[in-house]
Amino acid sequence: MTSFVECFGSPPTVTAQAHGRLNLIGEHTDYNGGFVLPTAIPQYTRVELRARPDARVRVFSENVGEHAPMAEYELGSEAPVSDWIDYVQGVTQSLSRVGFRLIGFEARVESTVPVGSGLSSSAALEVALVRAIKALFGLAVDDVLTAQLCQRAENEFVGARVGIMDPMACSLAAEGEALLLDTRDLAYRRIVLPTAVLAPVAIDSGIAHRNAGGDYNARRAECEAAAAMLSVKALRELNEADLPRLKATMPDTLFRRTRHVVTENARVLRAATALEAGDAVTAGHLLDASHASLRDDFEVSIPEIDALVAVAQAHPDVFGARLTGGGFGGSIVALAHVEKALGAARDIAAEYSRSGVGATATVLVPATAGDTS
Ligand code: ADP
Ligand code: MG
Image (tube, rainbow, N blue to C red; front, side, top):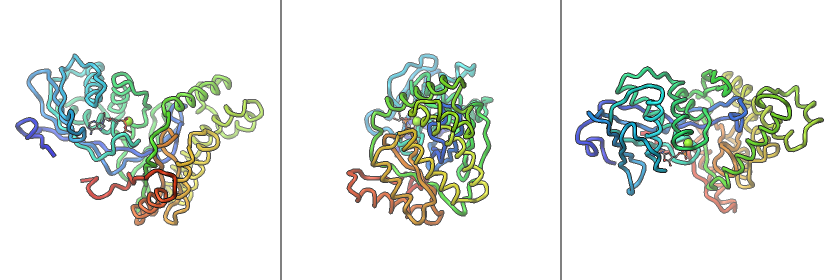
C-alpha cells in the first residue's frame, strides 16, 4: 500500500467512495428500455483528492500493479490512451462538457471491487471520483446526473458501449437495498432487501466471456429487428398478454428473443415485490426462471455456466440462481440464506471446480475477509 502522503507529500482534503454492483435480475433488458434490479455489493472503490493550483491531474491507483500506477494529464487536453486513466479523463471531460469548471487535483484510488469481473469496478471508480470532485469543488451534481456523466465518460471517452444500469446502481443503490430501475426514463424505486433472510452471492465461472462483443451485438440487433417488425420503439412496450399473438406471427428465433425480454421484465417487477415482502422463495424461483429463459430463449448461456447454476440451484441454502451479465461465460448470481451465504458460495465453487468442467470458480460475493476493509 502506498498512502496519499507517500504519493503526493501531504494529506488529501476529501475522500469519497462508491460500491460495486450486482444485478439480481433483469438481464438483456436494459437496451430494450426495460427493468433491472441491481444491488450494491460490500466491496467499494475509494478516491482521496486534493486540489492543485494549476490544471494538472495526477492520479495514483493502488490496483494497477507495478507498470503504471501513476498517470497524469492536463485538464482540457484529455485524450484517450487506452489505459485505466481514461476512466478518470472521461469523467473530467464529461464534467467540463456540461459546464463545470475544474482546477487540477491529485488523487489516490484504492478498491476492493474485483476488476473486470462484471461487478462494475469501472462505474465504482467513476462514481467515487465524481463524488470526490463534487465534494472538493462544491459542484451541484445529484446522484442521477452523476450516473449520466459516468455513462457518458465510458461511452464517449473510454469507448465502451455500456448502459445506464452500472453507474445508476453505483450512484444510487446502498448495501442492503436493490434499485428497481426503469431504463426507459430512469425512474427508480429503492427496494429494501430482506437482509435478515437472504444475502446475494456472486461466483465467477473461471470462463472469460467468449466472443462477448460479437454475440452481445448480435442479440441487440435481433431485439432491434424484432421491435421494428412489431412496430414498437423497444421490446419493453410489449407485455405477456401479447405473446400468444406474436408466437403465431413471428419467426421462431425473433419470437424467443422477444419472449425473453417480455417475461424478464415481468420477472423483475415480481422479484421486487417478492423481495419487499420478504419472500425469498418466490424471488429465488424468479432467478431460476430467468436463467431458463436466458438459456433457452435468449441463448446466451454455455454448458459450464449451466453447470455452475445447476450446482447452485441444488444447494440446500440457495433460493435460486442464474447467469448474470452478458453471458457466454462470466459469473452467476444466487440468493442464499443469509447466515449460510459464504459457506454455500464456497461449497458451490468447490463442487463446480471438482466436477470436471475444467475451470475453477471464484467466490466474488459475499466479500471474503479483507475485501471490505
Ligand atoms: P468491470 O466494470 O466489470 O469491473 P470493465 O472492463 O468495465 O470491468 O472495467 C475495468 C477497468 O476499469 C479496468 O481495466 C481499469 O481500466 C478500470 N478500473 C476499475 N477499477 C480501477 C481501479 N481501482 N484503479 C484503476 N483502474 C480501475
Ligand atoms: Mg464496467
